[in-house]
Image: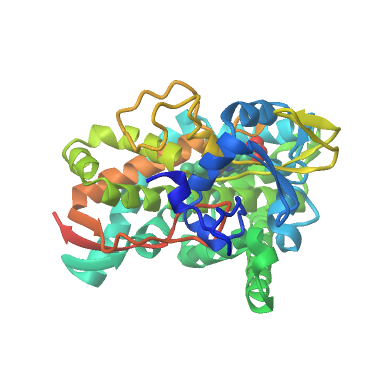
Length: 414
Ligand code: HEM
């Protein structure tokens, strides 16, 4: 299938340009990214008042140049007035020097030695969720892989890291979904916007109560650690901790959930690979890497120019919004052979762009890979069949986050 065949056309039958807010583009953005890389690697996007950047080298360079391309507006650009803690920017939306200070603290909790300590717990959590599914649906039938498994699994892991009670994990997923959908706020009516505002408020209230409880009853969880930590002799204040905890919840929930859902979608599309991976669990890791490359959970991130600059020969004024399209970089023809082909045997010679690059490189990259691998090992061991019912995928309504909104699967217990 060529790119031209799958892009939408205007009234005159001309292919329409890339507009991230167009529902057809959100459903299948890759043909548009391909055209952008070829024809317009730096494109002004009027709907978002931002410059989209599509090629790997340009994205790599700008993400490593935090002086020219600031992260300071990331959260306001993504969430607008729906930020649960507007008083205090989270780490992802900070520039040096404070970013590095906070990042050093957070890194300690996410080093591989700590994360490996969670591995047994990830197997347990995945097994418990599957026990619940079997208790509810029997040994054979259908369940929603997204809502009954992937939506609950990473949220349980990150809730344990943060020291958050897990009973309300299904609510977290709704809150995080709503908050992230604020990226589409320009396209929503008052009803949806009111829902987003309510979820943002509930998230904040929840973490305020939790913080106030932890201040009185310190534990060995991450929120207690943040409460006791000092930066330059100063303790972090309440809003800084709320902002960090909510960032970890948002970062830790939606992304890994979507990685797992999309993996099942790709396995449905590639039955040969499904059979190989089922027969040999050592292929789960390369499978996940290829899903991360080919159909990544985070499609786009945000930067702002601090000075007049240039990307690929296009002049960009100071104060411009920039949207590096990570998912396009992962299919850049100059970096990946046959990039439009899903191939778990490929040799990847440059870092994937899926977790970003430079100082803000994803804090949770090791955790999410480990969690996702554990989950698939358990799913394939416990079910002899786990197969999406339909070829049609109801993707999330987002140009930023990519994953199935729901995924009914047929299953059979092994
Ligand atoms: C497949 C799963 C994941 C993907 C695709 C992903 C993607 C990303 C990307 C692209 C960035 C860079 C943002 C930027 O440069 O502006 C990022 C940063 C971040 N991610 Fe992830 N993420 C994933 C999982 C996680 C998990 C599990 C956590 C937490 C538990 C997490 C927490 C964070 C945090 C805190 C940052 C900000 C780091 C900083 O500003 O220094 N992520 N992630």
